Length: 366
Ligand SMILES: Cc1cc2nc3c(=O)[nH]c(=O)nc-3n(C[C@H](O)[C@H](O)[C@H](O)COP(=O)(O)OP(=O)(O)OC[C@H]3O[C@@H](n4cnc5c(N)ncnc54)[C@H](O)[C@@H]3O)c2cc1C
Image 1: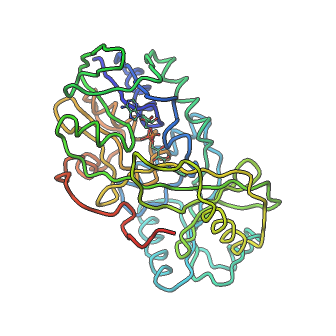
Image 2 (image 1 turned 90 degrees about the vertical axis):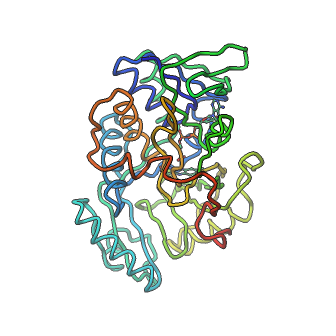
């Protein structure tokens, strides 16, 4: 089987490697450099704290593979609430996750403060921790997946924009057209226009997410998501990465530089949450993809024509499991993940003409 992959991010590279290791001849097309899309701009937080059984199974398998590949640094993932409504949600999530067998527990704010003295716990109404979580270095992930794909025999064309002239024929700017037995499009926001060229609609929207990296902090910190203040951080090379500032964006006209307003606001949120005030070293923005129900689009959209996108900011942490799953499906073998992923993530479950805000709440912009 000869498979064409469009997109050299974490997802495209993983599925390429997994297919080649199973004996497929694989050609991967990347319009810029490998990892130049969202994958190289991600925060690199990976966790299994999902209450939905499919999401939890995907995350568990992905963490397992990142560990096997030596790419995961253990780092607990804490999430906190500051009002009663969010606190109820945290408690319900913990109960559901524990019922799925995940190593997740609720902590009192005092216990969180004992474990991480640098966190300002006054004002917290609920806290939870996912103990199996970790972080990855996005550049290291892309490098590892590239080496793995090349070693398995994948032919990689960078700076090669692919177009589809029919579901299995990839046209490149040098005028050549290659017919594959199957094509997988994992092109992030560009997946939608690529499919539109073949009159296949896709329920996909794009938003922009921002992060900053601050100088080293002399404190032991976990990764943390503040559900009430809607921002997160993770330890990053001795310093700290702080993120969010997400808002809807035109996928073709967007600024890869973080907004000064985001840098001010995110630094202030981190300072208030920890009383630490590290200097900001750098910041950037990237594009994420969204779907009407916040579940991704993974599977065939036509005969031998597959897509994988719509990660809602969770694509890097899912890539190892999704790549494996797609390779298994394409080879007709039983997927390692034992959940109804095919139905839940079916890309054709929407008409494709749905109107929706990528962040759910149009007022979420800040
Ligand atoms: C600021 C930020 C923080 C994030 N933090 C996290 C996090 O902590 N954890 C997490 O799991 N996720 C995170 N994400 C989301 C994550 O980065 C993405 O979900 C994931 O990288 C998607 O991988 P991908 O391979 O599907 O897409 P991408 O990495 O976007 O790759 C798609 C590739 O397709 C290429 N392409 C597009 N069109 C064509 C074409 N016509 N021909 C050839 N190539 C084409 C692009 O150049 C691109 O390289 C974050 C994202 C951002 C922006």
